[in-house]
Image 1: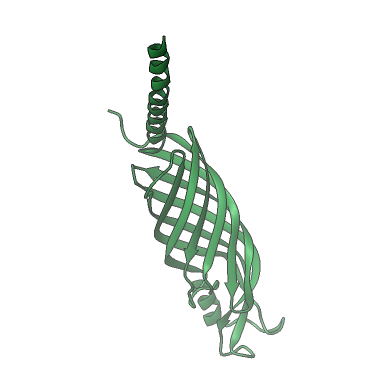
Image 2: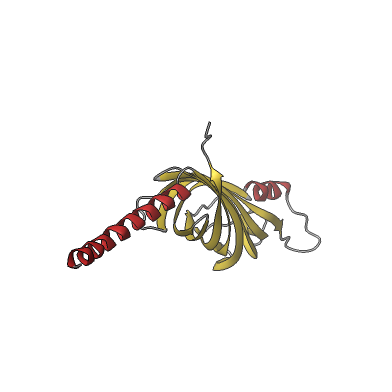
Length: 217
């Protein structure tokens, strides 16, 4: 009788270990070689020469293709705001022509690394290439009767978009096929862009695993 009890007690830790291993293997299968689609919302820091850095509400969507310890990341983000920027113009009163800017759209593509994980929790970091575009930019004339120089209008149009490297860090908590995540991305400053100061975006969202990214045949 004592031997039976001892055997049962010894079997409990082994059963727990096997269950934990099975759960870990299942979590790996639900993450590796998968297509994740996600939606997120948050805020983006926006700063121009004529206004201090402030936060703008942001929504976006992303697509993540995973392997075992890395993956491909694509995203679209739109920040909604109205700010006043400026561009060099010798015909302006102080040499700077005010420009009213609205919204910022960013498309990014890059690689992610997942250095380690603990069961459902998985941090990541990476970087890549981002294309940013100001939604609209309107030159502010000195007076209602003063036409905008054609050269200034062209300069504003050129400064509406930029391409740049970007960096991203984040983490996700995955339960079965659904993952909740939080992340931060960073784009360095540029004096050739209407949004001249560094752009930092913070967001939280949800991703869903829509299936394997590898052909089973």
